Length: 248
Image (cartoon, rainbow, N blue to C red; front, side, top):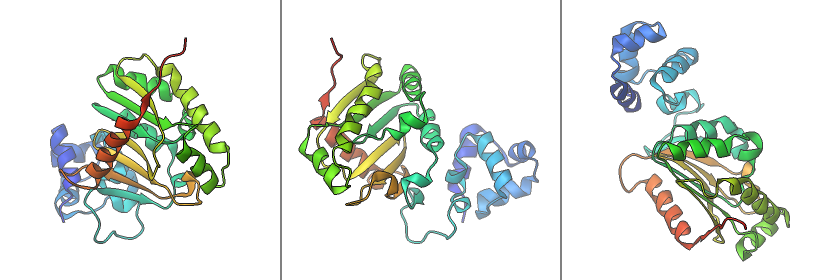
């Protein structure tokens, strides 16, 4: 089957079989087979080609990540991870860096992002300065649903303290043009990390901490798909959330 993602990436950048082949040092017929026959190049070549095209290598060639071919799955599914801990923080960061129009984050805390990437606020400011709308929704530490999640995940009061810590991390962004921070008290069925048409969905499993629960990486493919379902859910939560005010 043709590799439509590769074709689209090449077309967007004005790449021909010959020009991409020259850049990654392969025969043009090899590139043609990648695009038209769905062949997967060697990992090193694939990584170079993805870098040249400005794309995620696993978006172009999911087989390099998945040991078994997926069957009967949504065309929007780029990858499925057994648990969030399997994903390097760089994957979250790289996705956010690619955003040009919208960044949405819906979590209770997710302090792992700031802990592993201290420049997160700088990145969000930079994206907003370039025209991105940035919306961050963190858990209301006093809400009943946050308190219940702490008991369910055997985290106790740890979860509400992490919500407060998350808010402390994001507070320096208050007042930044294009950035809005809110707190919500909804039942969090999934944590969402969106950058334009890409979305990481961290499912929540009763009794399991978020880092041990599955994550699926989606890329929007038309209206009415899985991506839009989660995007609509984010908007619904956002409407119920309370804007965070600057102190003093």
